Each structure stands twice: as structure tokens, then as C-alpha cells.
Image (tube, each protein chain N blue to C red):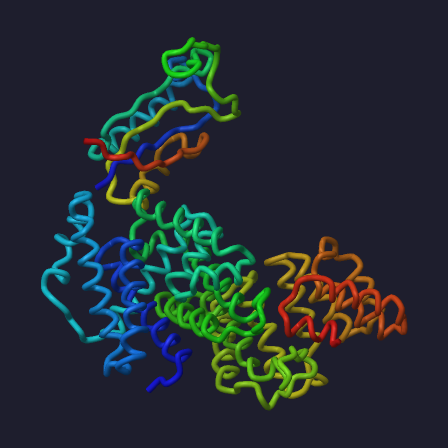
Length: 407
Length: 114
């Protein structure tokens, strides 16, 4: 039984998110469903704090949100026929409450909502904001922090996005099989962005936001269940599990980020590693000469996860995976990471040469930090200190900054 | 069902010119295939025939100028009104309009009136 206000708020947030996915299907209107769930959540926080949490909190929220939705529909009925149709067409709304939870039906509802949020006719920034709002239950202020925006701008973007869904008639469905290939990449990318917001939060005081990570993993599992032989989905799930397997080792007792080389590997979650490595194998067996970028990234994460100590890392394998990643998904950041791996395999001099060839990362703290490391190994202390200062002046999440700038 | 406008943007063609006959044939085939959901539409003469009209305030002096409202490489050349179940349906139909591969098709929901 949850005790503290924070636990209560978390329970309400998690339950509200599932209730929303189902209610959108029932009323066919994201905006109205969201208003209804929001009202139910407010009532839950008031009532539960006073009277205690009911025996079936999710059912309580679902019933309260549906009652609220019907109230809102009745109020809207005088305003237009569209809302009236939404009541009339849904026999469930006329037929009273069904309180049994069907996990399969809930998964379908979540998938439908995910594909709606990731519709290609929506602006990418709107897709991510809407997914964070509806699928992860983040507040506008939290989304603003995650996307380095302001709550006001996020609110406006959400209003525009929801309006487009409603007015343009974006359907609340999982696309049919023949349309899935066109929609798949967008959905995977959004789930990965949600994970990254949780795992590598670009700002804010908590390095890992476990709820977002858990949410992204849950969504990736739904996608794997939908397309069990899809290498990209398997790779994405593997990548997230393998990165998340290190979560207990990523911060020290003072809340400082710990570099991969210095992490206490006994804290790594072996169950997640086993599952992740199995998934990488499954994804690679379903990949051709050009594996999806998530599969290659997962293979890289597996190389680290399988090394008992930093010194045991198979750097030749890691460099060759980076070679492949540079082919399937070239970017300056990939080139940076490959240069760092070359530093471990072949020494600091070739690494520095490669780092200096990478263009466009002057605003990226890790590029300066990586240069500092290899310059120091080459005994060029003055240049290394200068690179450290550049790194510390650039935006990164708080615990990482404390490594770069320990004072 | 909702009404969508599928607005075609292509290079500035003269649909009535003999060399457009083959493409007009493709449009006719589209029109037949989409007959069940077609609620209207029009093909427009080229922008050389266009006149842009403005008034200096309501009831004010009328300013007439030659040519289209916006000078762009791909111009508005026509539109169809299509009754579709949802946006995915409209996108699927719009992709079969010849302008989709000769230019672009903008799909916009139509505000229901009356």
C-alpha cells in the first residue's frame, strides 16, 4: 500500500496513463479523454490521500474517468453533433461499466495510442511531446524540462498537435500490415527518444529517470510482441535493456556520474544483460548485410556488457561495430565514439588525429572531454586542461557535469 | 466520413494542351477509380491566366495584379474533394493522384458547413 504523497502521485500517474489509452478508444477523442483522466487524477489524489487507496485503484480511476468523460460529452452535446455520435457509437458507454482488466485489450489500446502519437503527418517535436504527455503521463512542466523548452511552448505545441489529430481525422488504429513498414521507423524512433529522455536526460538534476525508461521498455516490448521477427524492434529493446542494466552503477554515493571504465560491474543487472544479449543474437540472425542502427548499437552495448572488467573489453570488436555503424547511420557522434575506441585499441595518438578530424562537435561536451583524456595520455597537460574547461562550460546533465568539473 | 480537399501542386501545366493528353488520361483513370468518394474538384488553367485581386479594406479601392498570389516553382493546379473515413484513407487515395509523383498533393480537412 503506497504511503507517501510521492508514492501516491506515482501510482496515480501510472494508472492514469493506462486508463487514458482505453478511454481514447471509447470516446474517440484524445483531448476530451485527457481532460476526463486529468479530472479523475485530481480527484484520486484528493480522495485517496484522505480516505486511503481503494482496493482496485486502476478500476477506480477508470470508472471515475469514464463518468467524467460522459459528463463532458453531455455538456458538449449541445455544442455539436460530433460528440453526440461518440456516445451513440460506443455500446460500452451505454452498457455500463466493465471492471475486469484485460491485459491484451490494454496493450492494443496502448499500441493504438502510440501509433496515433507517431503519425507521420504530425511534426516530430509534437509527436515526442504528445507521447511523453499521453503515454508516459508527464506534466507539461516535465516535458518542457525534457525537451529544453518552456511549459508555455509545450502547452501550445500539445494543443496544436491534438487539434490536428481531431480536425484532420488521424485514426486511432494500429496500421494494417501493408502500411506498417512505412510507419515502423517513426514509432521506433519516438520510443527511443522517450528512453533517451529517461536515460540520458539532457538537463535536470536526476541522471536517470526510471519511470521514462520503464515506459520506453514497456512500449518496445509491445512493438516486439506486434512484430516478433522485426530485427529493428528486437535491436531497440536489446539496446534499452543493455543500457539500463548499468543503472545501479551509473551514479556514486554522492550522485556523481561514474564513467563506464570506473563502474562497479558487480552492480550491473545480469538478468537484463542476459535478456539483452539474447535479443541482440535474435536481431542479428534476422539482419542482412546492413543491420538496423539499433541492432548495431545494441551489439556495441553487448560488447561492454559481456566484459567482466574494463581491461577485458574487446576493443577490436567494438571498433568493427563502429565501422559498421558509420555505414548504416553516419554521424559526427558515431565518429567521436569510434575515435575513443581506437584510443583504447591503438593508443592516444591515432585517437587524437581521428577526434580532430570530426567536424561539428564544438558545442558537444563529450568531444572536448574525450580530447582532454587523450591529450592527457599524450602528456599535453595544458591543452588537456583547456579542453576540460571547454567541456565543463557546455550543457550536460548535472551529475555528468560534476565529473567534468568536480569542484 | 469526412470531407478532404486534395490540392495538387505541380509545375505550371496547361491541362488543355495536346501534350498533356497522356497525363489527363492518368487523371481520368484516377477519377474513375475514386468515383465512389469523389465529391467535386477542378483542374485550373495555368498561372499565366491568373489574376490576383485585393481590396484596400472592405469596400475600398480594388487593386488587380497579373499572375498568381504566390510565385513558386510548383503551383496550385487543381483540387479534388474526397469523402474519406479518416486521414489514412485520404493519404492512401491522394497517393494515387498523378500529381503525387509529378509534384505533390496537399491534403486538408474541409470544415463542415450547415
